[in-house]
Length: 396
Ligand code: XMP
View 1 (cartoon, rainbow, N blue to C red):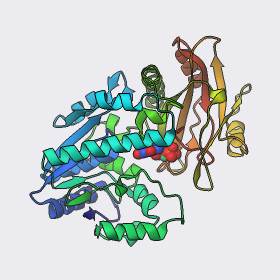
View 2: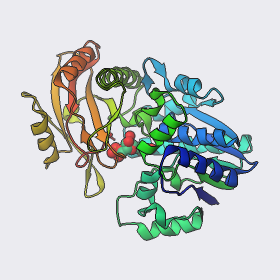
View 3: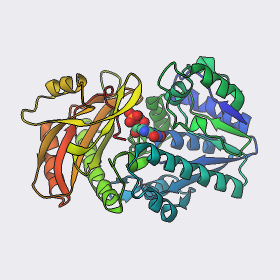
């Protein structure tokens, strides 16, 4: 199997799009391409470039039931609006019973990986697709191979890539979940957005005339809301998680739109601010373990709770210097009743490899806490003030 990657240095959106269209036409010709859309910006950009190149492409969205709700609408409805040609494959009835009850982070990841790959395989076969396109971008490549773009070539075989990855093993933090390591029964994989950083993907989407809701769409993990439900996933927690997530993301979006005219800015460190904003669901923060990042390895440990004076810089400094804990959670408030704790996470980042805590005004956080406490199931509300490292962005 082959991998065709567009590997040019990005200069501006216009020249990138022209080059990518040429690259796609050269490798796709009259073949049929399978393209999975996740709702995220990388796969959306890859799909739009294929459309622009005028090739035969089948866009597919897999609805496993754990996507976030944004402004009251499930992701499948957003996708259908943005890309009316999309084929929606509903695997909720098979997938949800598998994930319910699963509390182990790695097992959650494995279930998603298996569901995605077996569904992709079945569609590729049924629809007789010759090629698969994916939205791998530069940070994914660098993390997977441990080398930069200049050390890769436009077309590489699976064997060449395995050799390169093996040679790099142990040299750094190599994530196992990236799509570059899964193979499908197709002649080749095509990666038209491979040389782009996240922010350049946004520039390309903007150039292609996409609405700001897509251009500034916040990153979302492959294991979806299972990454934001700490401990076993249940039907009740999933419904709760969707509800609190939407409240938190929409409120922060509105704050940025009001203040800056858009829901994401490039701050003076060059970061996308906020890069991600979400809520997470805990049965009880006090007895939970969450992920951290130490010496390039994922670790599981308890969070430390602080309350009292709100001093953003002091709290972030304390979070940075944690020794025996993975996170520092600032208690915004709570009530005696309720079943679940909600944690608000808001970070700025270039590409998710490191992250800074977004300095949201305390008035906004207090407003959010009050809104969340109106929900009967909410017990305590916290704000996570830990940078990556020593924490990770998600909780599992
Ligand atoms: P962490 O939690 O590792 O997240 O700091 C870094 C970025 O990756 C996303 N993320 C994932 N994406 N599969 C994915 O496709 C995963 O298993 C996964 N875990 C985290 C996360 O949302 C963040 O943008």
